[in-house]
Image: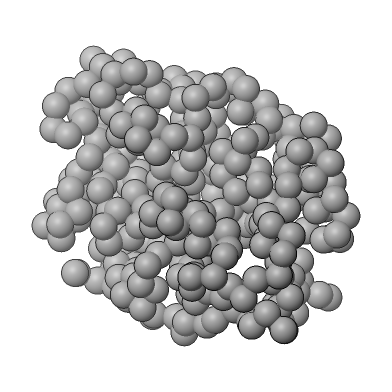
Length: 151
Length: 151
């Protein structure tokens, strides 16, 4: 394996899949004594260009972000269209889905991981940036999300 | 549920269960371009006083800690004695097991979570402190570990 593939080892997010984001976000807010964050939704296909396993997908998810130290805990409630979120939730139930890292040069990073046998699972654009979920499970025992924000 | 139960919302650790800690620690070191940390082992029962589901257990685990931002990623390879690590690994396979938070007043925190329907799963002492795994899965969709270091 190539060394220091991401160029970054600072965990930016932990993503947790849930069935009912309104309910679980309220529990988190109460448990940790913080305000319940606004729940957002990922953009539709025509704006996000979401691809799952190489094919366009209508999949969207509701998201809630909690600041918990230097990183965010992200709750994710996916819809029923094909996505890594829906597949993982159906297969494993609620719980941790990924840890995320910021990178520079998304295309090159995705290509580098793929050439090291860590395939791209899903990618999309969001306002101000883009993400890519990489199948790092065999090597790292957890899925990695790459995040790139425009400067 | 009582509010702000832990008195702290800073994630201190993410714990990931693995079958072969030597191998996976080397992969992490290579992937993130950092030195492979020394692999330690939890203390034996007579020193740690390990209890799982209310009963003493001989269970021990090999541990490796990686600094990844303000938190640690902890790899855990349990032995075959009864523990939350072994049970979770056998049931779910390799992957995330818990997120950890530092607390003050371990006994009171454990009692407070238990009175809010989040039972103690496992506890033990380590040099300079103690931990408790709490079954927060129903509410938070992930297990919480409480850590308390002596001043």
